[in-house]
Structures are given as C-alpha cells and as structure tokens.
Length: 300
Image 1 (cartoon, rainbow, N blue to C red):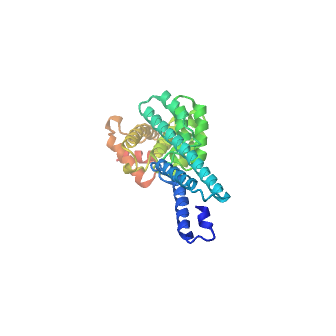
Image 2: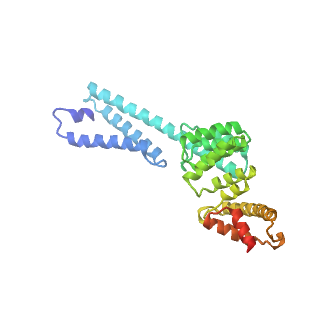
Image 3: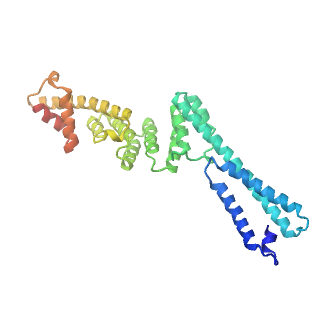
C-alpha cells in the first residue's frame, strides 16, 4: 500500500491515503473501544492486516525494499494487537474475580472472599466500574478476616488512589479506630462528612466513636439534621435507634441536673417518648444543646 501511495506515477494516491487513514483510525479505535466490543475489533483488525500482507505477497511485481519494510510494520501491528488481546483477557479475568469476591461477601464467606480478591491484579485493574479502588476491596477482605494491620495498609493505599472517596475515607477511619488511633479516626470521619455531609456511614461511625468515649451529647449531635430521603432504609433505622438510645440517656442526665438544682422534675414514668421526640425536634430547628431542650420540655 505504501509503495502505491508514494509511487511517482500513481494517479490514485488520494484513494490509497484514505484507505490508509481508515486502517490507522480503526487500529486506534480498537485499543480504546467499549469493553464488550474490543476483542471483536482487535481480531478483525488482525485479520485485515494479515489479509493485506497475503495480497501484497501475491503481487510478484512489487518486490522492492519499501514493500518489505511495510510487511514488517504490519507484522508489528499484529503483534501489538496480540498483546492488547492478552491484556483484555487478563482484565476479564480480574473482573470475574471481583464478581466472585462480592458474591462471597454477600454469602459472608470471608475466607473465600479474601482468596478471590488476592488474585486480582490491581495494576491491570486498579479501579472498579464504581470508581472504587481495588485496594479498598482487598482492605475490606483483610479487615473481615481480622487482619487489621494488613487492612490498614491497603486502606491507606486506596486513599492515595481515591482521596475524595467517602467510603474509603470512612472505612480507613474504622480500622484506625480499631487500632486505637481515635484522634486520627475522628479526623477521617469528619473529613468524609466535609465532602458529603449526608453520608450515613460517616455519621454513624462518628456517633459510635463519641458514644464509646462517653460523650453522649456529641454522639447525639453527630446524628442531627439527616434527611430520611438521603439515606437508605437500613441506615435511617439505625440512626433512629441510636438517637432513641442517646435521648433516653440524655433525659436521665437532664433529670439529674434538674434534681441537683432543686427544680421540680417529672417521674420517669410520666416522660413519654413523644416528649423526647419533641425535644429532638426543637434541637433540630434551633440548634440549641439537646440537654437544654430536654429540660425545657420537662418543665412544660
């Protein structure tokens, strides 16, 4: 083809240039096409190139050195396509392993989950189609198998790859909290909430951290102002249950405070949950400390 294009006496140079441009464009598309179409395109391109070589070889009159170089180039292109096909095959293998990993997690077969995810080549398949680093999946598998230190390393790697992924940030906080680094864990939870203030897992993790520290008011505040529509049903129910627990504990604290101040206090039997919800509603609206609102409601 090249010899025909650049021949001095050739009158069809324009046609051959268009053909050459078409082949090169198709070669480029083969390397960047959609995943499901890519293997078909690669195979078709190799067939086209092989066909060109075969036709050119039958032309005995065209035996100059330039034609030989052209055949070498075509053979190199075929080699590149073979390599691209092998990379694609490896990618398919990694995607299947990820699918098996998630299936094992759903079945709570954590050892099988870890076995599958360890086989994934994160260089060939660094990020899943949900924009989540593969290292996060590996970290989760190690964490569920009680290998906290290894999980921590993979969470931090995932965090470097996706520094604004709220799930990665929050989970890194969990493993740090389990390791005893409470200040760093808290900063990670707050970092996730600074990116997405309605991120339910971040709210729950921060609230649980404060609760474990004995800071009930702060645990309650972490769950304030969340919209039911912004969270899943499961997360919403967890938040409601946590808030109920914190409200009861804060109510006890408020009653003790009122008794110490000599103020008349209702008995616990007369405090219905609707009163706690009323205090909760006031706190949501005016942002005042929940304990003050509880005392206000108890005086009514």
